[in-house]
Length: 113
Length: 114
Image (cartoon, rainbow over all chains, first blue to last red):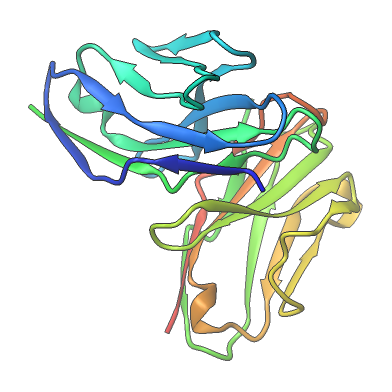
């Protein structure tokens, strides 16, 4: 079945550091890929998505590129801020399925001033 | 527009007790979903309502879990009797249509069973 593997956290960075959170997936067909973010005390929010190979999703300075050859969708940001501290979830939804997302375990990001 | 709300935000109960979680979706959203995240693990799908009907309940772990959506508005998820392994965060989400439309998530209910 479908699965998503993302790096374990917590990831601890200083403000303005470069961020990478790795995500790889296993799925049949051509899934859509997502990054969700959960800020403290809030619900999950869709951060960005990509629906086909080589697409790049971007939002709020975050980027992720759909790499079919490596089945990856790594999240990157060039300069993190304290306000980026949150839990980040990688997810996919299969093209032929019910569009219920399959999530990874989440990666906690802590950014220090 | 108000977002998805969930109540309570936290619940601590003893094994064997009953707990009812509530979710109010965004107004006009026919699709309502329940998910659960056990500590440190993936967020897992539990079930999907379309209006008041259960469209997919393949993720419900066992018959101790009962979900309802009376009148196609808010939904409740009852756990009776609760077991230790039911502890986790229960998320609700809603969307206007099915398919690739974004689901809007609530903040979750943190359930701890002692």
